[in-house]
Length: 470
Image 1 (cartoon, rainbow, N blue to C red):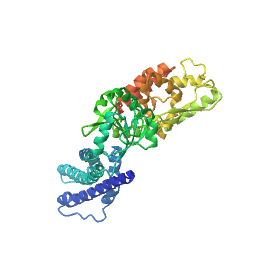
Image 2: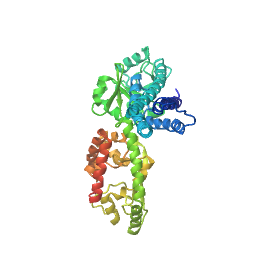
Image 3: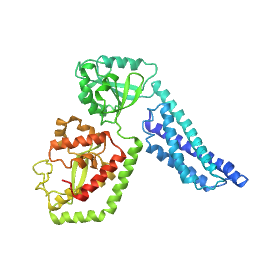
Image 4: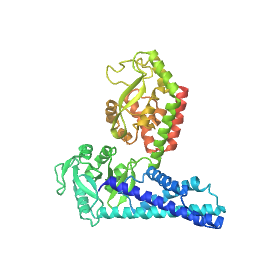
């Protein structure tokens, strides 16, 4: 299946539905609402509102659909889910159209306003829903008849895996799994899974997902291997795949992931998303807006800091260093230099409150957190968010993981300029303190929301004003 082409079909269907709904609504306004008010039919001719609406309104709906995450995972929705998403976005978008375009119209009485809103909502939602149901029904048919599917990896090769494999292969209606191969657990690593290709062990799963373009992973280990399930999940959670777990294994990861959907009676789908798509879109918009505002308004401050660094000590103004970000990918972080030149000539070191490697200006910058200002550039690029766990170097991550393997869960979200750990704990001076600070970041991860982000930013601003940073 060509995913881009199918997404394009959905976009074309939505644009068609939005355009047709606006055209029919415009006819209703001219030949019913305005005709009653004026006592005669109003000809549409080359009405600019009609033309502008046919261009701008479909574009507006497209932004709403994309922002709500509608075009994500279009092959994995039921008809019921399609109805739910269409109704929800239909209410939101219709209200936007009403307040922007309809509310300033001249009508005979206020009932015409509400009637117009209801007519537009019915037309748009009805047409859009019909076109979407046709597309999703076609997708379901293709999947159930094994014409379309997802490249799937099975984790396990014991009794549970064999039973599941037979059940999926012999089902009259396919769940969409195209089996690529399996990885073994600890027991019987050489045992075959009914002719399915052996690709390695569970420890190789990240490499196998990348090499074989895996889209779905199913964990179905036997009881004696249940202790491996959390470790396998930790390896998978930062990969761009969908995870399914057999119900008896699901209990091993309760509290760490969310149940999203039940497929038949045998598999539970695990959702690693920590925020709804609309909140993620809003968070990104907020990041870009605040970053641009900070860089533009704070430009004179940035220049003064740069001048102070130059006059204070020899060396560059900015400090660049590789950090590990979203899904474990490295990126270059930007900061104002707060250390003397060649501060790490003896190897990676963490700064402390009385670090003699700091310059005079650098000590002030770290206390006020002003050394972090250039990271707004990282936010604009998309490597970071304003609020998120602080990114670390691989050198220290390797040490943290030895003491707290679940640290890798923080890579499920973008790192941030400030974090709940920074607010509650501050800068860490050693690996043990990094582990302690991580606990606050894990708590943030499991409770992410836009409201919590605002609170963290307010607390960060207070710390900067009071100069309480380490």
